[in-house]
Image: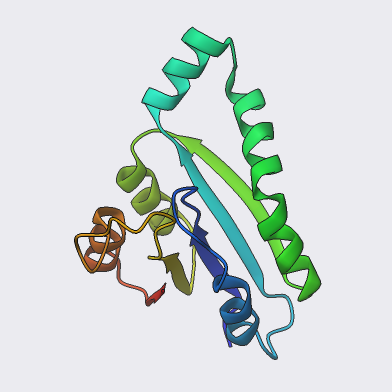
Length: 140
């Protein structure tokens, strides 16, 4: 169905329901690729460099390790993926990523790991869904 999918990954959300939905979305689509995209905020970069002595490559490697359970689930379903990281403001970087590439759909998780949700959609999910001209699938 879809061949080029963007998956903005937020480490504060639960993505347990996402692999099954991605498998359904890519069914019968040879060459389908999922781009897992994470924005490392400037605050995270500056605090990690200042307090932990980490640089971008080390932060990136740490996040790839943190993603391993999720990417293992994608591999179990034979889903092709690549992982991309950018540094900056989350919404700005996401909108730039979407406008600079020919994604067919954006898939976002809106299921918080913590139960303190006050709004139906999170701030980033709402802004992306409102501003892009391609379909946005929000998985609970």
